[in-house]
Length: 127
Length: 250
Image (cartoon, rainbow over all chains, first blue to last red; front, top):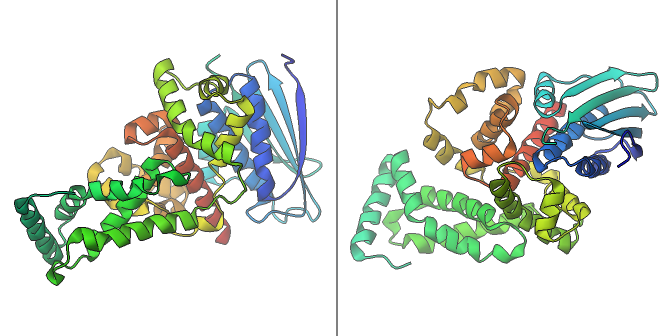
């Protein structure tokens, strides 16, 4: 298997396209031998972080997702490229933080040069 | 639903006592005594693409409402009174819960089978199965399994605001657990993180707590609460969507 393989996905920044972000993550995780529980965790994390970028109603613009298959897990990065900026800087509620802490090994939400971006790492435990 | 004359009298007395006192233990007894009816009616809706255990829950909500509203003084048999209420609840469930994204029938069917496959495999293996293992057992491709997992979220966003099916079992769940249950104890801590949590049905609060605060896996939660893992997964997704929805309104 080509480890360190990178997959890119660009989707409109709108909730109805987030299923593609989840499906891509789940598909790659499945290739890495993730368990059902781990895939579910990953999907929750992708949702939580993507929604922190697009909001419930979506924004004009796109989200560019990059997935890296690594030896010990899957790393995902998402960058929001919005036509009108975000208005406010992206922030995770304390609850979101708690949720993410429970489902992935690492996560962060920052402002990058192209816009708000998140990163997450989900390790595969039952190897 | 054959019942001896004595049993019938006994129930009638309980209904009268409950109408008077609204005593929760009597309510529980009356609900338990008629669960068979709820199950029987749920079965009649079982071929429409929803797991039976979900439907039984929905029917039980209808049953609870019927127990609360039944007036024994009017001389009607309870089952005669309750049947339309329960059937109404089931029909509403299907109306509210229609698949929002058009999910191919094949994937819907796989989604419905998945719950059982995942729980038997988890038991056999003593751990959460991989997607490959699930696909093999289900006789489907990995992609189909992933699509089927995704299909669990395909309910309409709008329906998230409607009272969710099974929410009324709050009460029976809470009384089962008891007010001092440690599961409910951490609630203040959780509410400090988000006051919106308090507005979720008790059962969803408990699942949220076990998953994100206690770090239990979905399968462990399923085992602890005696529901399927798919059900846990759906309820979690629904709670999170609700929390997100309300957070933005504020």
